[in-house]
Length: 91
View 1 (cartoon, one colour):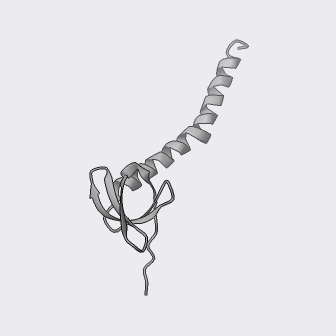
View 2 (spheres, helix red, strand yellow):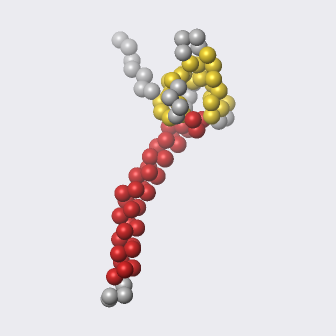
View 3 (cartoon, helix red, strand yellow):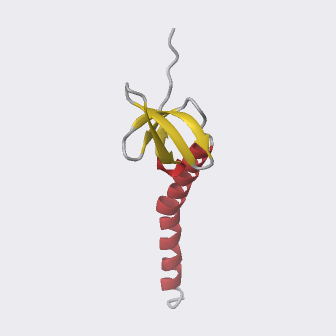
């Protein structure tokens, strides 16, 4: 039994790391991939660089967004989208 103690300890540490670090990160990555997959025209987004814009065109993995009051158009990759802003309904 003395010889198996380090083995059990190693397994226990791996299980703890899995449930505290690895699994939550995998869930976050899956949620981000799903969000990026479901992007559509008209969505207001924030890029990972902090640029706020509205999607006006999607072609494969390239998005064209309008930025600012001058409606400057930028092309970005789909992976560069950090989040989608919630649109509040106006009454």
